[in-house]
Length: 85
Image 1 (cartoon, helix red, strand yellow):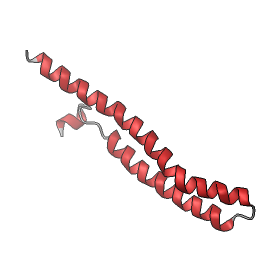
Image 2 (cartoon, one colour; image 1 turned 135 degrees about the vertical axis):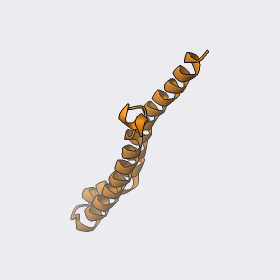
Image 3 (tube, rainbow, N blue to C red; image 1 turned 180 degrees about the horizontal axis):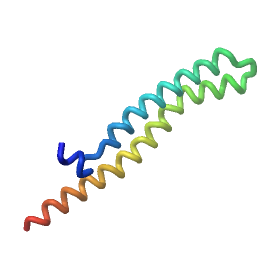
Image 4 (cartoon, rainbow, N blue to C red; image 1 turned 30 degrees about the vertical axis):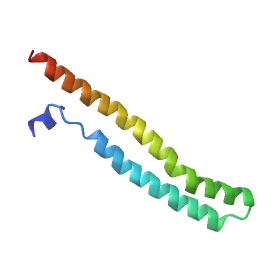
């Protein structure tokens, strides 16, 4: 618990994963609504693209954010290992 209060443990990667699943769910719901309620073919195509490509785009964005935090973790491990030499 001490690491948490000294900001040694990051909670943001967990939050990123939760937000990822919420964004995927939102893409699927909005994509299905667009497919069902659209009158024009272009709106249906937009719904289909959101349904298929939305989760992929959200995943790429989430992975980029998580990589930044993993770099930070690895740098902390390197710093910890070199301080005791």
